[in-house]
Length: 269
Length: 339
Image (cartoon, rainbow over all chains, first blue to last red; front, side, top):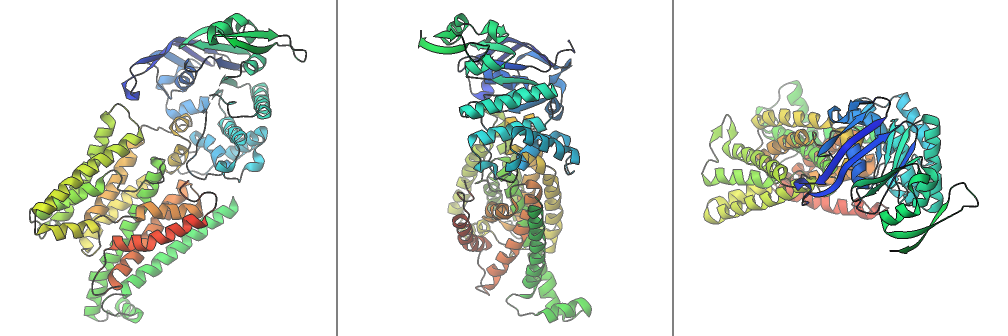
């Protein structure tokens, strides 16, 4: 396998089998993903097209029935959970926390695989958490109970936890869904800054096609569990592609304020 | 952060000191009056032999049993609440209480109450076997189903628990002489405490508890959900067996000697969490101390309030604990303990 790529996934097939109580419904079919260092990748596609499943397969939350995933040429299947945790951070669609942990506790959990069982966190762990929290603008919340934060604040804290994990790759499953429009932009600015400074790679499932179009370097379009298009957003996100993928007619208007066009949905077909 | 550390430390030393005081008090109070002077005499000069018998042979094993079972129940309760991500979790939720009751009833029905097995009562031995087999059965059922989720473990526990309880009811109906004994056993109590039991109980609870402390940080991360915990480096699947096995060991020995003592394992972790916060690294040891303290006091009340009659200790734990817990629920802001 090629070691110049951060992550390669080839021929991923996944279906929810008996262990999930499903009737072998096929979710992913022969999905190939190649990720390079320092880019923002978006995954778009309609509900049920397999976006979340793809993210979960990439970090081994789900194990694909066939296909191989390598990180820097190493097969992920042979790694321990903490080895995977040193390479890949994961942000779920929504975080519900049962007990009243403080924001600081939550971010510090990002260092879980770095701290041995009975050891206390080192100065280095504390520094990594502080930097991550300052980057995300949540340092001031550190002593607050996580469950008292607003949805937008929660997502930024969880992002800080992922950044504190200090990985090469961040997998974000619909990070923008519960955010208001200002928080969406702030969130994307943090991601952009992170990629610029630390050269990490981010894969984000995004529902807002405009944001995917404006911000990402590369887009994977999923439909019925298959990659139906991939490439730079200006090449992939076209009126024809959106029509095929979502079954809607759109207009792509020139944007007087930016370089990239604005997508306006017109009607469903 | 430092304010929090101070609070945890204060709580730790307060509980430890209170436990010591409670244990000494429990040695001194009882249906026969003894004073601190008697205890000091015993420790220095040997003192009166009849007093020595009462304090060291009758009360000491009982006080130690109370402390150790309280510790085990509360610690496993705290572990289960984190492990199942369920505030209603208690140590008996895998059906081990019913398993133990089933085993004990079999021994009672077979007329084995007075028979001994290496110094242990046969009732306890049967109860232990019943409890262990139940937890194994629950684990196997939960692991062979389609959905390997923690909810399945809980549901399997409930199902098997009802199944075994049905047998216990049948035993009660068909064994006329045994009814009272079975009822008394299931209510739980420390009346049968002996040093032999302490010698078995203590190492088992100690090993189980120390083993469970090993998973403290994993339990913290588990609060974020299983997918996230896995992504942070927790071997989510691989921790199931050791956590359940260690917990089952602790609960099986406790329940087989004392019967079913409810409430401690459910409520003590919540009380401690209100003060110490949810971090299992501090929650588990503090719950152990709190459980021990609570049980020593509850057992002292059980045998003194209506002396010479004895009240089932499970009734005391619920009578004292429930109102206090409700008060805590009402008092704590932000929606209370059980969000």
